[in-house]
Image (cartoon, rainbow, N blue to C red; front, side, top):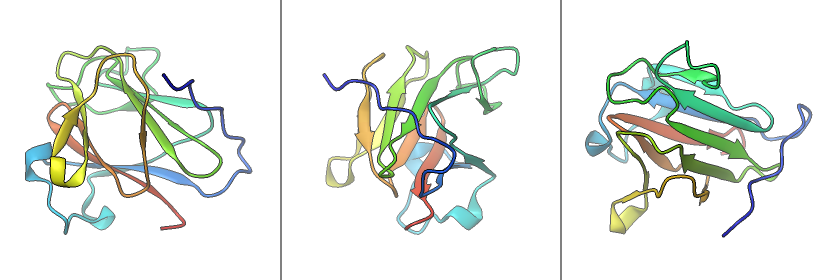
Length: 134
């Protein structure tokens, strides 16, 4: 299995973003664009954890939706702009859109590589990973 990605320093380029939409993953369409996102989050250096409740001390980005676990998933970005994602044993699951194969559920506590432009299902919430270089 791959080792966790190395942290980014603040000076590394390109900037990496997580765009969150008020849509379920099944509603994903190729025309979804970042301008339609309900929230935009900069993914900083190291690992960024996504969760439902601000009380979850490890949740750096909060998505306040019923299907999102308190500590749901983690994202990391390499200096080259490659994304890594893993499910944190969430109740609703995390999935990665793989094109023709559709949505791939992620096994808990395993890192998966994703690229700029990849769609991620965070339980009942659609998200898009993107770098400024795209």
